[in-house]
Amino acid sequence: MKQNIKIMCIFVMALLFGFSAHAETKKPNIVVVVADDMGWGDSATYGNELIQTPNMDKLAAQGVKLTQCYSACGVCSPSRSAILTGRTPYRNGVWRHLSGNGPSHLRASEITYPELLKEVGYETCHVGKWHLLSKQQFNQSEYPQPDDHGYDYWMATHNNASPSHKNPNNFVRNGEPVGELEGYSAQLVAGEAVHWLKDLHDPKKPFALTVWFHEPHSPIATDSRFQSLYKGHENSKYMGNITQLDHALGMVMDALDEQGLSENTLLFFTSDNGPVPAYGGTSGGLRGNKRSDYEGGVRVPGLARWPGHIEPGSTSDVPVIGTDVFATVLDITGIPLPTDRTIDGVSMIPALSGKQVERKIPMFWRTHVSSPNDRVAMRIGDWKIVGDETLTKFQLFEVQKDWQEKNDLAAKMPEKTEEMKNILLKLWADIKAEGPSEWWESETQKPKKGGTLSY
Image (cartoon, rainbow, N blue to C red; front, side, top):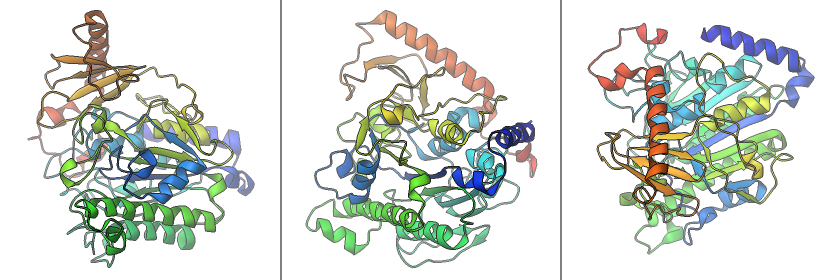
């Protein structure tokens, strides 16, 4: 079925664009950059008065700053899976932070946007963190690796840079361990992206590049040239780490400029979830942090640049979410959405111009961790309902006005709360019916060798 959908997409693209070299040069390039654990308040671009982020500032000046941009989950693996598939994590199988021996992974049966782009002539590259299968599954051929999800070229780690951001030794390039690298992760990841763009990419072909940095996730290591900018501040390592990340973003932006690619490239920057205050991160006043489905756990930076299509220096408060990346990419490349599965996201192109988007499926979050009070949430318009893990206790917020979620309206508005609860429960039942529920209901089940590709 997956192959049939891909063939249909190829056929439609052939009708729309043909396969001439001239047509291919007109297709937009796609660059998606993701920070790791960067909070909504962790940059000058979003109001931090101390942290220097000149390249994020530049990106915002050249494009749009999204003030209500969300990750699809309060932790990393699920939110990343949603970016690639357009599907809320419990549907696509990556329902929690992936580590250890669990069976969960981004199934080969899922359709990613790099796969669809590759089939219509795009070159594809992924650099940085991956984390879409467990540690024991990473770089094991019986489980789907980045190349199985549509990447021609990849250099990645399973999860964090190890032993830290400094001189990491756990990168794998196209299936081959790289060994210890000298330098800091963000610059190494950006450097690999730049190398691919300049030396390996066929300039006659459009491309899709994902750059998933490790910064500012722990274990944090910061180059002295960035940490010294905050000398004397108790949080200098973390603040310098954000600037280190920002510098690497600038490397990618400069390479696009130098190769004459910026004008025809949609560049999107975001984070996978909210911050970790213990390491120095800040949500910018939002309630909650990483692992929470309050705003601080899922509202993240969102910057987009596409010259000629996005007004420079603009701001949009239209809510968008990581699942929207998939539909957005297909929208601007003319590829139809798959029809054999639920796609939760919608094209964010209207939102990039400050216009509302139409959602048939509400924004939904369910973050699987131990804290019980803010484990599920759903937003419709300005209304957001937040529930506990048991789906029996709920809070109601009007987040457009109450962006810090200080005023729970559930008791004052029981009818609205009941309405939102019923929609949430119906949506959850639909999600659970479509996803591999056995994976989260009983992680004692072990996948058969080679069998995972049939899911």
